[in-house]
Image 1 (cartoon, rainbow, N blue to C red):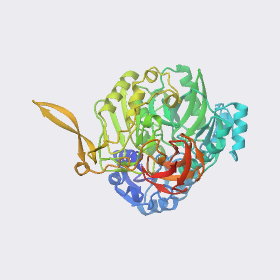
Image 2 (cartoon, one colour; image 1 turned 45 degrees about the vertical axis):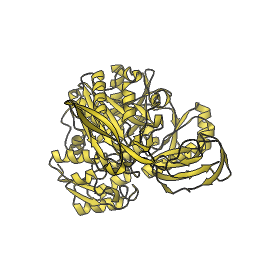
Image 3 (cartoon, one colour; image 1 turned 180 degrees about the vertical axis):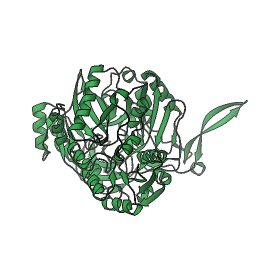
Image 4 (cartoon, rainbow, N blue to C red; image 1 turned 120 degrees about the horizontal axis):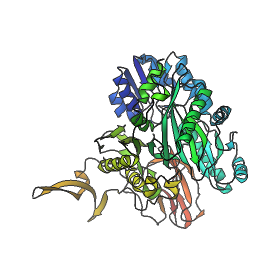
Length: 574
């Protein structure tokens, strides 16, 4: 087993790997950007080294600096987590060439499966068919239009070297093709360092089913049941569960066998996930993620297998200690991604800021994998995942009920989170009856009124903030809401800026901190309410900022590349 491992990542996955290493007696090395100097993963590791820079490109995607630190710290292996370098074949190869073990598959497997085009070909070679698509990289919007006219709309533009919904855009008509392609390429470049994209037919109401696989370096492979990840927004998952319920057993078995075949077809080792879309009794291969998945804990809970431990053992050359026949699924588990986002009645707006207080729930069958503690800041420069709540029950309904209890106990203050939307999802009859699909959150779920309350008001001309206090009356405790001046609050808390203007007055403000990537209007242009005027990137997601009135653009206050704060006015319309 390794003596010392560097974790080339941040946030909750870095914390997760550090804890697994500690249980195995392995020393850990954390790396951090300027913004993460006091982050939780930095505090927990045995050693921590500065990468410098703020953005991911300047820090966590700096190959030269990462390898320099690995050499200085004299580590035996590097764990990439997920995101960043986890599916970067060049990085994995550079690690190997430096005489350090990369905790993941070989570079050749990452190359085959990381390029979604060659991945489709590799799967088809093994008899596993994918969603109908075009295997050529896109060079113009005309190709999108031609594909849509041929296969029918909508179609999906997808990042060829990414996953997790990043760099994916759904195109509903020819008119949307050019803007969608530009946006997909920008997101892909920002998140994966490459902007190549390709096309697929976009299924209308599929369920998203994943198969977790494990391969050792001795030719042995197993699959660990399935996960259903159909509750999504912006093609990114909100709720994941294991196993996948109410799909015929013979189909699930065939999916598992296909997943093993896909892995064998690229000489895969370590942990990975093979994804499928299931609809109307049929399924299609989607892609293989050559890394640990965010949702891996639900598989761990129902299988009783520590996947990070298995990654470490596989990379160290150990044989799998169990066979396919040994894998048993017990009960049902649900994972909730707690993201720093305002549900905003379905808009899901990034909400960076300082977490003034966080108290995760506990109790039987309740697990919290978090990357932040009270006082930590969720930065606009990185992914907005705060942590993951995982709950187990002996049945799916018991798991739902336990998860709802835990969500309603969860205390997190200072930032908006997706918790109100998560509760709405789990309480909905469609989710409980398993009639939802990957489009359900955006097309069916009614989130009217489900939004972040800024917890501030104006009383007699003074801004005051909401606080919940406990009072006792005749020996009985009650929770009461009071409004207090800012001086009585723990911190200013990173709430949305008081500069934000009222709706419908032509003073177009951004709802969150971020970077302007594109200005869509110029002074003198005529616009209608609902037209996009600026594209803002925050937490690696692009957000269209829309006009709130009909009128003429009087002033454009920003340019592409400008940084803005929540509430800043970017366009004035009269």
